[in-house]
Length: 172
Image (spheres, rainbow, N blue to C red):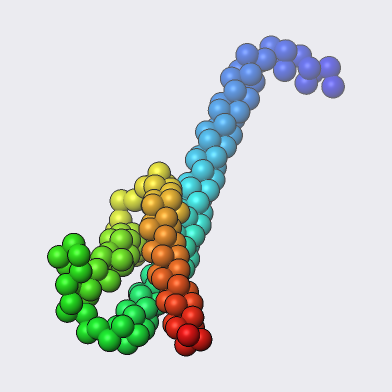
């Protein structure tokens, strides 16, 4: 046993070098593992953002279709109730059809942006980064949501007011 300690004592610097090389090897291996885990994490975040954007975009596209449908319904009820055909001029020099089209104009822009976002997401060789996806998500949640919800509320309010007006005329 004494011999082993003597050999170790005489060769301690070489043993330290060997242990240091082994430690460096494990440290390098660990850093590659950490890098790999970071890449997996970023890939997962990208996937989650894409799914979230697609789900929110689908919801707003449904709302856009609903608002357009309600606008068409409002226009038909309005024309029928007042005996118009849509080509009559309003005070501002526009036809009634043009006026109804202006109501849903923000929806066209929002729909264009949503479809552009979805197209960018669906491209296989896209150069999108997490910050781009976060921008898309913020844009959809802030700007597009405001446009879609305000138009939808305006059209619904117009329908409700017209229904009230028609109902009050039927009681007169």
